[in-house]
Image (tube, rainbow, N blue to C red; front, side, top):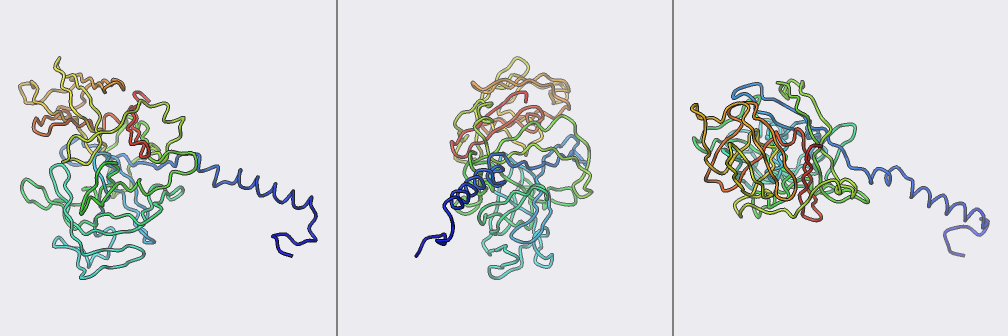
Length: 363
C-alpha cells in the first residue's frame, strides 16, 4: 500500500512515534552541545632558557588524519596557517635539514604530503617545508576539536634565522605554529589559512573563536617534560550572548605585506602617545612599538614603567612592565604589537562570519 508505516499501526501509535522523533531531535545531546562553545585547553609555558621571561601559549595537536601526533605547537593570533615539525609527523628517515625525502605525493594515515616546497616568514626567522593536507584534530583527548575537511599546512624540515642564515631548533624550540589569524594566508596562493576556518561552529553559534583571560601566574617548564600548566581559555564558536559582551569593529590589515588583523590603538608611554594599527599577538612575549621613544641610560625603559594602551572606541588597558626588555621599538614596521601580557587579564574575539574583532577589557 506504500507509506512508511504498516496499515496495522494505529493512529495513536503514529502520533506517539512522531512526538518521540520530535523530542529526540530537539533534545538530542548533539543539538544541546552545538549551542555551547567548544573549549580547547591551552598550555602555558615560561621558557626555561635564555633570554628570560619568554612566555608562550601552546595548543596540543592530537592527530593529523588518523595518525596520532600529540604534539603541542605555538598558538599564534598574529599569523595564518599551521606548521609542524617533520619529525613529529613523518618517520624520521624522511626528515632532514635538506628537505623531506619524498619524490612524489605521499599518503600516510590520511596525511597527504606533497613535493611542493614553501618558505613561511615569521618575525626574525623563516620556516622551510612541504605543503601537506589532512584533517586536524586538536585540544583535549576528552573533548577534541576537529576540522570538517582536509586542511593545508606546512611540514617543516628546518627553521632559519633570517639575519644570519643560522639553522635554529633544539629541544625547547616550538615544534610548530598554530596560526589562527583570519586574514590572508601563507604559501602558494596564500592557501595556508587558519585551521579554525575549517571547524564547524555548531547550531546557533557564529563561526570563530574567543580567548578568555589566561591569568598572570607563569611557571618555568618545558613541553617535553609534560610539566606545564593548562588553562581553558580558547573557545571555538561564538554565541550571540558572548559576543554582546565584547566591543567589536571590522578588522583591518596594516598593509598588504602582513596577514594578520589589526585594530587602531594608541600607546601612552612616558607622556608620549603613539597611535598605530596594532596586532594583538599571542605569539609575541613583548610590547613592540612602531616608534623610537626616550629610553633609560641602560637602553631599556626599565622595570615598572607605566604603560597605557587605548584601543580606539573599544577600551583602555594599563599595566606596569615586569622586566626591562618587555618594551621593544622598531620604527620601520609601521604597526605596533601587543603581546602575551594583554591576554593575561583581557579577552580577544574573532568573528569569522562578520569579519570582526572584539576586545573585552578586564575579563
